[in-house]
Image (cartoon, rainbow, N blue to C red; front, top):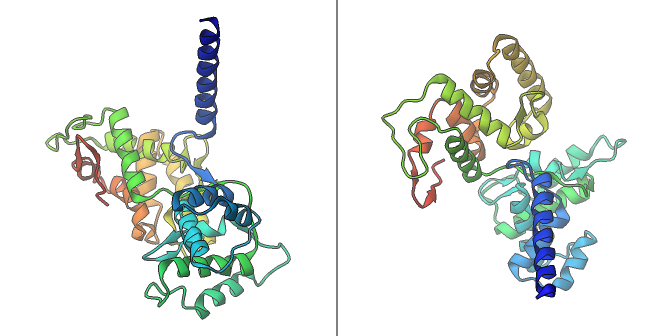
Length: 296
C-alpha cells in the first residue's frame, strides 16, 4: 500500500509539473512552433515511417509524394500554407533567416515562385506538389531555416473561438454558455472590452506595449508593404493612445481605425473585423450548445 501511495504522489507531482510547465510556455492562446515540431507532428498524423523523420530533421526533403504531403501538412500546421491561396508570405518568412549580406534573396524567391506559377492559385500542380515547391523556393533562395519557435497565425475558427471565450469570461451582454440573446444590445464599452480581450488573449497586443507589430503583420497576412504597415499602424496607435485613457475604448478604436490597407481580406483576420465593426452580436449569435460554428 505504501508503494501505491508513493507512486500516486509521484504521478500527481508529475501531472502538476506538466500543467505548470504548459501554462508557463503557452500563455493565453498564443502558439509558437518551429519546423522540427511541425514535422514531427505531421509524420505522426500522416503515418509516415519514423525513419523518415530523421531525414527531415536534417532538413533534407526528397522529392517524393510522401515528403511533398508532409511539407504541405507542416505548412498548414505552421500557418504558411493555404490550399486555396497558396503560400502565406508573412508567415513563411518567419521560418527563414536571410544572409545579412545577401541583397537579392527576395527577388530570387519571387522569381522562383513566378517561374513555376506557384503564385497562381489555379496552378496545374496538386496541393502537395505546390506546397513542396513553394517551400523549396524559400529553402533554396530566401535563407537558412530558423530553428527557434515562431508565432503561428490563428485561423478564422480559432479567432472566432477566442471571441466566444472572451464573451463568456467577460459576461458579455446577451451571451451565456448555453444560449445567445440578440435582443440585448451591448454598449460601446462592452464591445471595446471584448475587442481588448481578443487582442490580449491572442498575443497581438498588450496594455503596456500596445500592438505587437511582428505578430499583427503575420496575422493580417496581406499587407504588401511591411514598412508602411509598421509605420502607419504604430503612428495611428500612438495618436489614439493620447486620446483614449480607457483601455477598452482604445482597443476597439485601434481595430476600427488603424488598418487602412484592407488587412481583413484574409479570412483569418475577419474576426478582428467583426469586433471592430461592432458585429460581435452576429458572431455570438451562431453559437449552440455543442460549441462554436465557423461563421467567418
